[in-house]
Picture 1 (cartoon, rainbow, N blue to C red):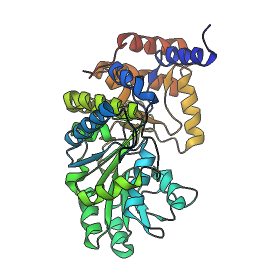
Picture 2 (picture 1 turned 180 degrees about the vertical axis):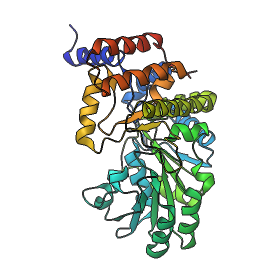
Picture 3 (picture 1 turned 135 degrees about the vertical axis):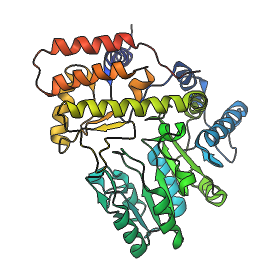
Picture 4 (picture 1 turned 60 degrees about the horizontal axis):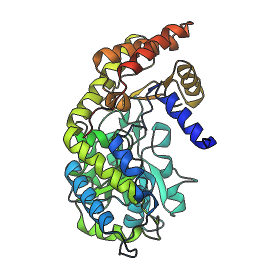
Length: 393
């Protein structure tokens, strides 16, 4: 008799495989990545300095994964220790800051990470003073001029660039130059755009001046859920290594590390092609939804997006939740922020024709078309057309 939890897992898989999944913070992993996740490594421990026996092959997989991460992200050093992007940022801030230091980031109301909020956050738990950079809401980016003025006047110990609503490249060069004048550090949180950075189509934070690149490995990047830290600074990386075991986490989950190694091999082979198609798809969908009269707002240059995200601005989570629920009635899955992500459908092989069908389905539902059967027919056709995952080994 099937366990009830396993039965629910099967129902979940059947349901989500019948949906068009557009959550910007999710992706789909290959069978090869699943093989590593479900291997014997799932029940094992590994720690450095070495404590456990029986880790010979785990150690080799770990080293190979970090080497691949360095190649894919064009970095000298990589740490695959963190089990999530939150832990990656926590370990980085613990390395760079002492209690009382100021960390400046994008305001939460514009998509800045909640872990860097002023109250009840990772920053407050670490004893850090959180502050916010001036933001241009109409341009969906930092107000560069005012941010540089703020940095020069306040000299935050660390500036963190990155956002959960990230449509355009951040002004890394300008901010890095100002932060480095007084010995501060610039951290780029690429959690949402790691897959685009790997593919070379968004921006290259380390080469543009960031001291550290942190991020999660399961959003636009198609790896297992986890975190990653990259840098060209050997001194920082040496200090960082002491801030994991018994500090920010214990077991790094070696099955996750091995699965990330497989995903990085996929990215080495297909990353540029995948990332380019993601951006093409998001630009196309944004334009079509705008033409349908939906609230896809261009920035001051007339651009809608340069990332995997298309942002439908319904003015907050309350209305966004209604939009989420309406779309799920026709098996189109988004979040309450209505950040429409093209990462997963791109990995399933969606092209321009599919994006046109998808835009039509979304517009029909959100503009009040009453016959869900008409929209579900479009969704079913898309799902049946794309049963497999692309960009694999």
